[in-house]
Image (cartoon, rainbow, N blue to C red; front, side):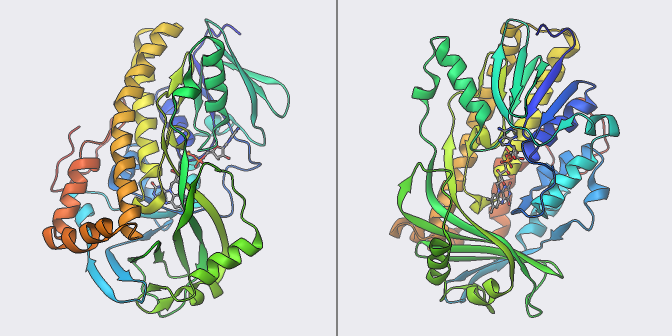
Length: 433
Ligand SMILES: Cc1cc2nc3c(=O)[nH]c(=O)nc-3n(C[C@H](O)[C@H](O)[C@H](O)COP(=O)(O)OP(=O)(O)OC[C@H]3O[C@@H](n4cnc5c(N)ncnc54)[C@H](O)[C@@H]3O)c2cc1C
């Protein structure tokens, strides 16, 4: 299992795993992606808003051309109450575009994944093994051996767990640490679900405006929806009666029907009710939304990125954006290390992973906090969250100021690949790097 040439085994071919693959390809480093599904691009998946800092990464990867026509362009955001009364509207996405030089791109997950796949050359695409999960990881001083559920194994130098919230890599990593006397799992706060989300896609009803993002706020219920010429993509949130650590909850038909009934009086746009949206649905999925931030992001030669180590609800649209930032910093660290040492030992790798973990845990933690506050404001979780979020805050801060604040906090200082030279755009608010 001694690995003479560096090879990263990436577990998970989601947005974070594929961003890492793109970065490693551009860095000239070898990798393998292991994806448990029989195809990388699924037929359905959530609507995912790529913020300008993610679009800048796509530009570095030469992907903005292929993005065209694949996302819903958004300009305005309109907030309404459950009865459809409009409370706020403004061109927040245009402010973000002006400030940072890149638009927000509202992808469906399949289109986002297809775009990242298109970023890989033919040789890299042959380094994706589909239809297999991972059974175990063995780690020695010099490398890793990943045992696959489909049989056989793959050898590499490191394992990167980009396998989402139910990460098997995280589980194995914690077990390996515990076998070595570290109490990783016990030191972790549990991942908790406080909210459910029914997300899906519906045929566009002609009266629905294209290019606007609508958000409904109300007691324990909220929604987000936007439309292109043909389709509407949405997420409908409800607070769970009690928080749960049951993360893989599969909802029955009866439970879905109860959820749908609970929204029978809710408007998702000023002129579109939830029942009208539901009637036009092509598919929907009801799941729990997870909130959590792992303390340990690496052990030995195993390191985590994306939802496997930081989970938040979709309310602020930051899960992928945050995971991609982690992916970029991790690849930067690996590339820098490998440029001076072609076969780093476990201690040297550990130092780079620790820097990555400490930096990203703090940054991702800030975003998890904002996401947690946002969903509680949107669902009027308490008198204070309604009063501060929906009464005081909008009076104190215009949309323009709010987007300037968001830009300063999350966008302007974002990472890009250090080793890819490209002519990148900027807006009113210059990038830090
Ligand atoms: C309704 C909804 C809307 C959202 N909207 C946004 C948004 O607007 N903006 C945003 O930034 N984020 C959004 N998110 C969050 C976002 O989807 C996640 O943060 C993101 O998908 C995490 O990416 P990931 O690659 O870390 O994990 P995942 O997307 O979960 O991908 C993990 C991959 O690993 C594979 N895998 C899992 N286990 C194994 C295994 N054992 N072996 C091999 N492969 C494995 C999976 O099949 C999958 O392909 C939304 C989420 C939802 C549910």
